[in-house]
Length: 171
Image (cartoon, rainbow, N blue to C red; front, top):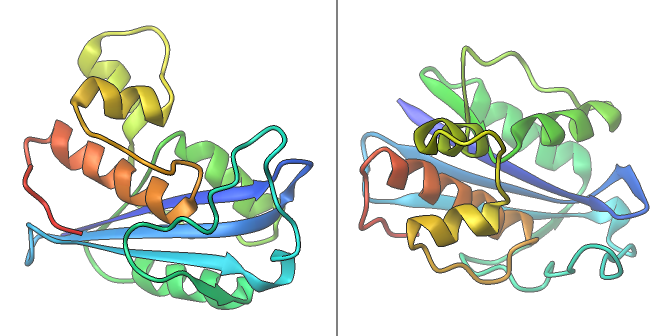
């Protein structure tokens, strides 16, 4: 089994214009390792956030960012999701799925979907979901440069695995 966690950063003035795609992958065969990718979308690389949403595009912490066409990043994601035994995950995942659909890039149905916001809400018996930053803080996970899609995907996956009892992971 594997978990593929995604995060998107869209232009703050138009959610249909994707700026970044982050993908983090955990596989049961290598349970102590998380692989993380950060794609900067070439078609929109001239657009920057920073007024309403922090702009941390240039602060990917888990490797080297790749500037690539949206179609290429989408194809990479589809390839991961086509593998057997995949669970799709995210934090507030539905908003990312909505952004992909708005960009005419829907994902196939995944039989298993994990949302760290909803999982945390259930575990804590809360009425409302919390931000990724608050979730990480509540779990004792130190995070830097959120609002970078690669970092957010990695931290979301780390939170999900932490809530499942898996710790001491390497990225």
